[in-house]
Length: 401
Ligand code: PMP
Image 1 (cartoon, rainbow, N blue to C red):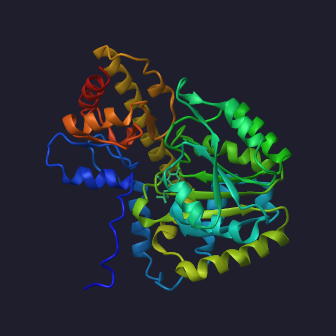
Image 2 (cartoon, rainbow, N blue to C red):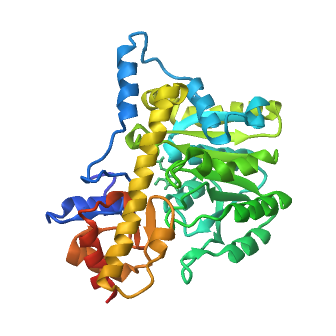
Image 3 (tube, rainbow, N blue to C red):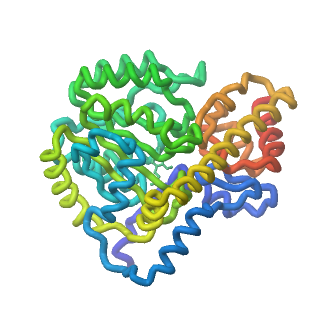
């Protein structure tokens, strides 16, 4: 008799569970649009050329050893990551007001930041957009924060509910933490305009709300790393404080390397130093120190001008392929005369389209067409190709008719 016989089976993760179901389906036409991972036109995972090159450099360098990294990770990686988001001439960096620690991709960065806030920040409430990435509420709740939502998406316009957002942030208690998707909001593909960002910034600063930026898609929204960093840079430019979780999963295709960073921008270098000492106390008992390989790849690319340029070209190609899939899907639906206005497919930004399909329609498409996606109707445009667009359009057409 097992000591664990009382353990009940937990539910499959709503996003990763889509892949589990997909893997079990023997159909040759099956299509996985659930997980947000880039695929080529041939439907294959992509390792960037520049990543292969960087790995080759690392392998050839026999002076490299496998010693532990410090608790805060690879120092060079941390510096370069801050620079990538805040900009080469960022006063916050020059004034040493930023502490950056290497973490386990975006998820680990969010978790470490949240644990720090739960321990050392006076407000335990974090506002997350409605809807948001499904892991957000779980990460923050388990870290000891109390999760509330602010209005974000308007299903009628399939755009931003800016008025609702402003109202909800306005009525948030002073000092509350606010999670902001830096760009390419997941799952909706809807971002504020720069003017709206500026209004959000002013409102948040006037109420003393603490920004916690989640940047999982820098470069994936517009194809430009600098353009996608703009909202974060606006908040840094005003001299105020903020947290930032960065992931290299999507923009360098380093998903399984689990490489990311948490930065905390502080008012002074002295505060930043003390904050960093406390981040170490969060990390040490959690996983001791982070893995070395992914950080070495990222650092090799970011510090070398040629490799960096090559990366931006490959990144732009991924972003452009996704944008062309939006156009193809939109045109395929129009050609079929599919009822409804599908212009949001081309208007939305980043990896995902929030189709507006309901869970019943999604279930129908999975059952009849072997197309897998999350039940909220989100499809990963990066999982589509010219060859699979017609099949998806047929399925959507049948689902809404
Ligand atoms: N935040 C958002 C909004 C995401 O979409 C993702 C990836 N799906 C992450 C964070 C974290 O991903 P990872 O831990 O793989 O970097």
